[in-house]
Length: 406
Image (cartoon, rainbow, N blue to C red; front, side, top):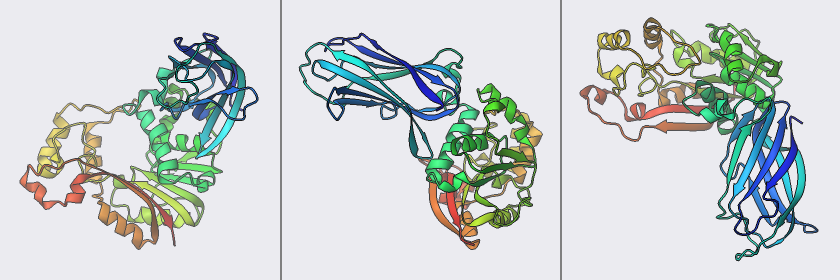
């Protein structure tokens, strides 16, 4: 197993109704662990069920993943809603992958409760408690891990957020993710690494003609995922979405996160290629940039002015890009030039929700799951905005999965 319990420590050893309790679980991680959970159960000897149970994940603690090393996981509570007795504290470590929970280790220790509790036998409902995870021998500081950094971190947004969004939210932990998977326009490959490590597919291929994935070994190592931890079935190729170098019906799943809008000259051929290499009954996930939104023009680092790409002239937009110091978004050390931004902006495909839906249906894709993120309010503060549809301006992001029914 990739993780095991090394010891369980109680402080104090015999808590009463007034004394706080800390349960510290020493954990040794030898491989990669995903979506860790810890369950504490207080049982009286001879009874079949626990008198009190606490779940790490149910308490709102999301440990997305842990690299190898030793860790201390501590549960704190000011009181236990239990009558005095000699209890067995059973500690279970579990992990989840693709919606399936598996046990990693299970150990127990004596936990006597000494003082009287006016509430008598109780449950965890309303019980004040907290969990804390710290690194010990051989482990990186927890604060350095992507899931502790949150959405401001580029690696988190792709390795954790994007990968988990694809796997569980949009593809519902489909068993097809364990087969052959292709990512069209994979960029730096961080999302592919996140999907591959979590799903362990037979084959995982990321293609992108611009070879951003060449940077992945360095990016991953900086985030405590050296190549020695990567799955062998993951590989990348400098191939074009308009000419995917694989035979018909080769892949069970095709992914495209933020890439179709960037295919110069349009993405019609790319969709045909995706349909061709995807098996009948295969799944297609796509998250295209929406040009007309405040987000989809990809120039937000140069101006926060709403819809400036629609209300200003091309000359004014160009002047903003070339003469405004950008507030660069964290991209794991990649900094593009104004010339590159201007080229990418002019190559953008103006995708809309309604138009894209019809294009997929015309190719015999059957919608499976759709999620939209919208603006709270659109201010029609400029007369030029009257020319654009409400849905196009208000829809910030589209996430879509579909079955290939060719």
